[in-house]
Image 1 (cartoon, each protein chain N blue to C red):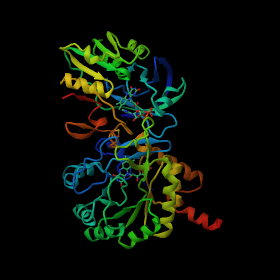
Image 2: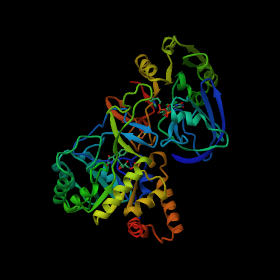
Image 3: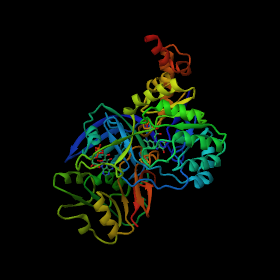
Image 4: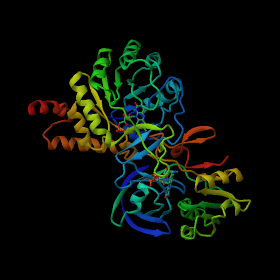
Amino acid sequence: MLLLNASGCLDAMTAPPVARSLDAYVTKTITPLPREGNPPVRIAETEHGMLNAIGLANPGRDRFLVTVLPRLRELGVPIWVSVGGFSAAEYAETCAALEGVTIELNLSCPNVDEAPESAAEIVSACRAATALPLYAKLSPAAWDVAESARAVEAAGADGLSLVNTIRGLALDDRTLAPTLARGTGGYSGPALKPIALAAVYACAHATALPIVGMGGVRSGRDALDLIAAGASAVALGTILFADPDAPARVRSELDAECSARGYAAPSDARAIAHEAHAHAS
Amino acid sequence: MRREALEVVANEGIGPYHLIRVKRGALHPGDPGQFFMLEAPGRVLPRPMSVCFAHASELAFLIDPIGPGTRALCELRPGDAIHLLGPLGNGWRLDVERPLLVGGGIGVAPLPYLSERLGRPPALLGFRSEWHAEAAALVPNAEVVLEPTYVTEALPGGYDVLACGPEPMLEALRALVPDAQLAWEAPMACGYGACYGCAVEVDGVLERLCVKGPVLAAA
Ligand SMILES: Cc1cc2nc3c(=O)[nH]c(=O)nc-3n(C[C@H](O)[C@H](O)[C@H](O)COP(=O)(O)OP(=O)(O)OC[C@H]3O[C@@H](n4cnc5c(N)ncnc54)[C@H](O)[C@@H]3O)c2cc1C
Ligand SMILES: Cc1cc2nc3c(=O)[nH]c(=O)nc-3n(C[C@H](O)[C@H](O)[C@H](O)COP(=O)(O)O)c2cc1C
Ligand code: FES
C-alpha cells in the first residue's frame, strides 16, 4: 500500500528525511510561470481543520525543471509532479517537458481562477503530450464527482487523486472580517475525511482507475477507511504540519489495524466497503 | 528537528502570561530565537513558541493566552504530556560587540535565554501595564518602560540591537536601527517549511518566515 504526501503539504528540500519516509514524494503544484502566491494572511485554523489560500506559490516550470527536479531525484524516492495551469495548453506543455516522473494534474485548486476547459479536455490535451502515468486530481465540490471521474478516465487518465480541498471561510474573532487576505481558502484536515470517503467510494464504483485517497487522514484507521472505500494508495496532507513523523506512524497503525481485522495486507481490504454494502442491502 | 512527547513539569502565572516548563527529553534546545512547535491540546495545528529558558533537563516557554491555541497551552497541568517539534528556524547572530536586548510585551519570551547566552547584557523592555511588566523579572539587567512611553523613546545609541516584540515596535526599530536583528511573527501551520503559510515580505519578495527567520536583519 503506497503512502504519499498530499501536494503542497511537504517541501522535500526543507525536510528530506520526511520525504524519504514516503513511498513517493509529490511536489507542490507547478505552473508555467513563477508565482509568488497570495499575500498573507494565508492560513487559519478552524475547529476541525484549517483553511489555506497559498495561491500555488512555486518557482515556475523552467526553474523547477532545471534547479528543483534534479535535487528531488537525489532523494531516491519516486517523484510525482503536480502540474497546474490556466489553460489546457499550459498543462500539456508542462507534461511534455517532464520525464521519469508520475504526473498529477491539479484540476481542482480552490485558490486560483480556473482554466476555461473542462477537466476531461485538460486530461485529453495532456494525454496527447505525454506517455507518463497521469493522475487527475479532482475536487470534492463537483456536483457529481463520479461523472467527472468517468470523463477523465475516457480522456485517458491512468488514475485519480481524491480529494483536493473544499472552499471555506473563516472570520477573525475580533473584527469579523475574513481572516485570510484572499477571503476564502481551501478547507483541509479532519473535517474533510467523510467528504473524501464519499468521493473515493463513488469513483471506485464508477471507474476502474487506481485511486490515491486523501483528506483528513491522521491515523492508520483513517487510511484503512479510504482503502476500504476503494483507494489503492493514501496521501497525508494537513497531518504532516503537526506531525512530520506521521508516515511511519500511519503505516504501522495501518498494519496493526489490518492484522487485528484478519487482513494479511492493507491491499486485501481494498474496496471492501462496496462488498459489505452489497451484502447489507 | 525532532519530535517528542514530553511531560509538563510546571505552569506558573507571571502577570497575564504563563511560564510552562516541560521535560527536555532528547530534544536539542537550539539557539536563542529558535522556536518549537507545541501541540495545543484539542487543536488541529501546533503553535510556534520561542525557547524562554533551556536547562539541562527542561525547556521553558512563556505564553500569552490570546486565542484558542495559546489558551489550551496555558491550561496544561503538571503531569500532562504534549508533543514538541524543534528546534526550528534561525535565531539571533550572537557575534555582536555591544548587545542591547529590546522586548515588548510577550516579545520578552525569548530574551531570558538570549541574555544567558550573551552573558546578561543590558535590556530595555516595554509593557502595557505594571501587571504585564511582571515578566521583566525573567530578564537580567532590564530597564522597563510602561505605556505611554515606548522603547524607541528610551533607546540609547551605540548598541547592537537584538529585539522581539509586536510588529509596530519592530517597524519603529527597523527605521531607527538599520543593523538591528529583529524576531518577527507570522501565523504558522508547520514551522519547518512545509505549508508556505508563514509568508512575509523580505526585501520585496514573499519568503517563508520559518525558513528565513524568525530573526531577520532590519535592513
Ligand atoms: C517564531 C514564533 C515564536 C513565537 N513565540 C511565542 C512565545 O514565545 N510566546 C507566545 O505567547 N507567543 C509566541 N508566538 C505567537 C504565538 O504562536 C501565537 O500567539 C499563537 O499561535 C496564537 O494562537 P491562538 O490559537 O492562541 O490564537 P489565534 O486565534 O490564532 O490568534 C488570535 C489573534 O492573534 C492573531 N495572530 C495569531 N497568530 C499570530 C501571529 N503569529 N502573529 C501575529 N498575529 C497573530 C490572530 O489574527 C488573531 O487576531 C510566536 C510566534 C512565532 C511565529
Ligand atoms: C497548505 C496547503 C497547500 C496545498 N497546496 C496544494 C497544491 O499546491 N496542489 C494541490 O493539488 N493540492 C494542494 N493542497 C491540497 C492537498 O494536497 C490535499 O488534497 C488536501 O489538503 C486534503 O488532504 P488533508 O486533509 O490530508 O490535508 C494543499 C493543501 C494545503 C493544506
Ligand atoms: S510555517 Fe509552514 S512553511 Fe513556514
